Image 1 (cartoon, rainbow, N blue to C red):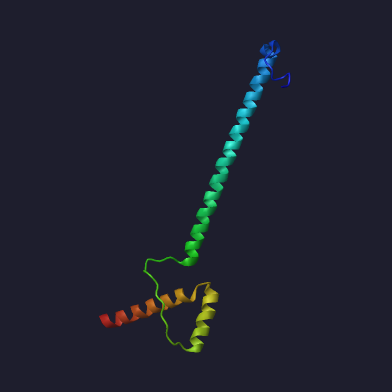
Image 2: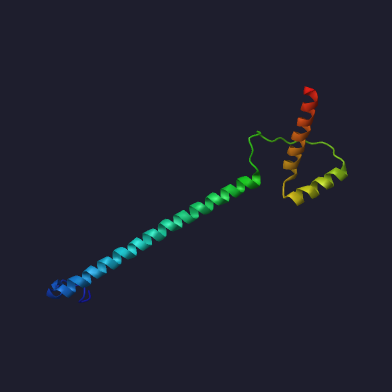
Length: 115
């Protein structure tokens, strides 16, 4: 043990007590800095996770329409090419574009049936 840490009469002088006080203050400030650093790290990763989840939901385009089913049919080759180009241009999936087209078509015929 170093002479600085032993309890001696020297430690109980004003200078010795002041040195101990300064050490305690420094240690408590340092532990406070470490604690704040830990808290900020947790908040950073929590926010990063939240942003990641939000981006995943945006990419997946989660909707309340219900479960999606596989639907196979034959479509004109030129229409498929145009749809694929539109999907790339709009940065949208083929499925989402088809959903939108089918919804628009159903609205169109619902209006005709109501007349």
